[in-house]
Amino acid sequence: MSGAPAQRLSLSRIIVFSLSNMPIAAMGVVPFVYLPPYLSGHLGLSLGLIGAVWFAVRAVDLLIDPVLAYFMDRTVTRFGRYRVWLAAGVPLFMLATYKLFLAPAGIGGTYLFFWLFAFYFANSMLYLAQWAWSATLATQYHERSRVFGVSAAVGVVAVVASLLIPVFAPLAGMSSAEGVRAMGWAIVAMTPIGVGLAVWRTPERINKSAVQRFAAKDYWEIVSKPEVVRLFLAQVALTLGPGWMSAMYLFYFHDVKGFSQQQATILLLVYILIGIVGAPLTARLSARIGKHRTLIVTTALFSLALLSVPLVPYGSVWGSMPVMAWCGFMAAGFGLTINAMMADVGDEIRLAQGRERIGLLYSVLSIAGKLTAAFAIGLSLPLLEYFGYIAKEGAHNTPGAIGALQWLFITGPILFVMLGGVCVWGWRLDAAKHADIRAQLEARDAALLEESALAGATPPPLVLAAEAEAQI
Image (tube, rainbow, N blue to C red; front, side, top):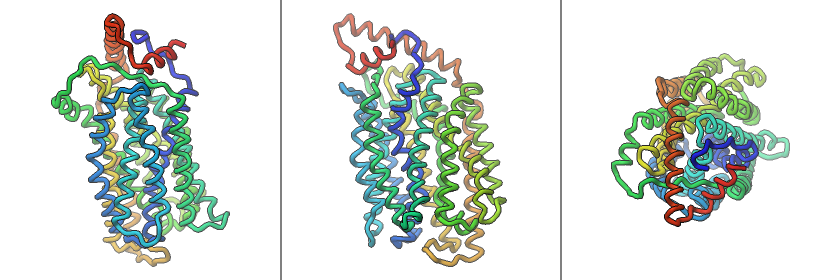
C-alpha cells in the first residue's frame, strides 16, 4: 500500500532494470576516448575542428534536456511515464552511433555536427528517462544508493565489453580504426537488448499529482534551490575532471608513457572494471556515513591517486595498474552519489510543490554534464594544438608539446574533482530528514488514492501493477 513502508527491491529486479544503463554507460566513455583520435588520426579532421564542433553541439544541445524533461514529467500513459521515453530513444540512438563510429572517409564538420547532435539528442532521451525512472523505482534513502550502485556496476560491464574489442582487435588482424568501428557495432547491438529487457520486465509506478497546475515560479524555485545549485556545480566539476582526462587519455599514455593503443586500453579497462566493485561498495559506504560524506571522501582520494600517475615507470603496464585501479575505484561513486542525492531533493520538491519534477531535476544534472563535456573536449584539444601537439598518426611531437600534454592531463582533473567534493560540504538532506519527507509523501499519496477510489476513478494500470508487486 502507498501508506506502508516500501519493500526492499530484489537484486534480480534491480539488475534487469539496470540493463537499460548499458548503452548509456558505454557511450559515456567510449566516444570521448576513441572518437577524437579516430576522427583525427584516421579520417584526417583537425583537433581544432573536432573540438569546435563538439563544443558547438553541446552548446546547442543544452536547450534540449529541459524541454524533454518537461514533457516527460507530464506524460501519463497506460505503459508508464518514463518507460515510454526510454523505449522511444532507442532507434535514433542506434542510428547516430552507427553514423559516428562507421563514418566514411572524407566527412567534414557538417556531417560530424549533424550526427553528433542526433546522438546526444537520443542519449538525452535515454538517460533522463532512466535516471527519473530509477528515482521512482526506489523511494528510500539507502535503497536509492543501492539501485544507482547496481546500475553503475552493470554500466561498467557494458563499458568493459566495448573496450575489450580494441584489446583483442590486433590479435584478429584488425587495425585500430577497424577496432573502433567494431566498438560501434557492439554498442548498436547492446542497445535494444538492454533497454528492451528493462522496459519489458520492470513495472513503473506513476506518482499522482497533488496539484494540477503549471506555475512558472515553481520552476524558478527549483533551479534556484540551494541544494539543486550545489549538485549542479558538483556535476560540472566531476564531469569536467574525468572528461578532461578522457579527451587526452590515448595521447598521454602513448606519447608520455610509451604505451600502444592496446596497452592503454588494457589500463583503461582496469580503471573501469574496478567500478564493478567500486560502485556497490561506494553505495554501502554511503549507507554508513551518508551520501555527501562519501562523495567528499572519494573525490579527495581520487585526486591523491592521480598525483601518482606521473611517477609510474615509462612503458610499465603492470606498474600502472594499481594507480589506475585506485582512481577507477574512487571515480565509480561520483555519478551514482550525485544521482541518488538529486532523487532525494526530488522528493523534497514533490512534497512542497505537489507535482513530479524529477525529470526536470535530472535535466539540470544533464545540462551540467553537457556543458562541461563540451569544455572538456572543446577546450583541452585546442589547448593541446595551441602548445604544438600534433595528433596525426606517425607525427613527431617536440619535448615542449609532450610536456604540455603531461601538465594538462594531470593538473586539470585534480583541480576539478576536488572542487566537486567541496560543493557538497555541509549537506543537510540526510537519511533522517529524508525519512520524514517520505513519510509525509506516503501519507499524502495514500490520501490521494483513497480520494480517487471514493470518486470512482481508476489509477493508471501500472500504478496498480507496481503496488501489487510491492506487496508480494
